[in-house]
Structures are given as C-alpha cells and as structure tokens.
Image (cartoon, rainbow, N blue to C red; front, side):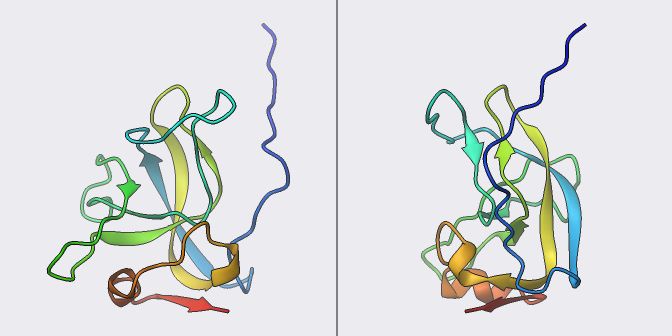
Length: 122
C-alpha cells in the first residue's frame, strides 16, 4: 500500500500570539464549498458555527449573520481543511488572539460580538 502526502503550500497561521489559544476538534462540512484547481479547500481563518459547541456530531459550517443582527459564529478555522471528498476533520479556534490581516474575510460586527473569547488584532 502506498501513502502520499499533499501540501497546500505554506501554512497560514492565523493567531497573533502562537502560545495562547485553545482549539476544539470539529468536522468541517463540504456543503457550499466550491472546487478550485480540483480541490475543495475551506481556508484557515473562516468563521464557522452551526451548533458544534453544543453537539459535537454536528458539522461545522460557514457562519451566517441574520437580518435581526445575530450570528451563529462559534469559532475560527485554525488551518486549511480539504473537503474535496466530503466532510473532514479540522480545528476550531475558540479562544485566543487572531490576526485580522490573516483572515480570508473580516468578521462582521455580529460575529465579533458572539465570539467573546476571541480578540481580533490588527
């Protein structure tokens, strides 16, 4: 049996202070992820939610902000996750300091409000 390893390029660290953060293991959903170059990658720094903190059997999905101003955000994806072949394991940062310039999209005010244990730093 042959095993191969694939690299997606340099790891993109999202934390501002790499010695102070807490991650939680999650399964990242492949729903709504578009393929680029034949791969479906959820990038590090994506704001995720969907109920993963309450129920660890729930798939983590991209957070949404409702018209009333609420958000289902629960954390920030720590590293890129390849969901080409379906949902895959990932790490969700739930506490720490995140560098805003390393995120694919800036968090909304509603996401910042519910992510109370994450500080977004320039």
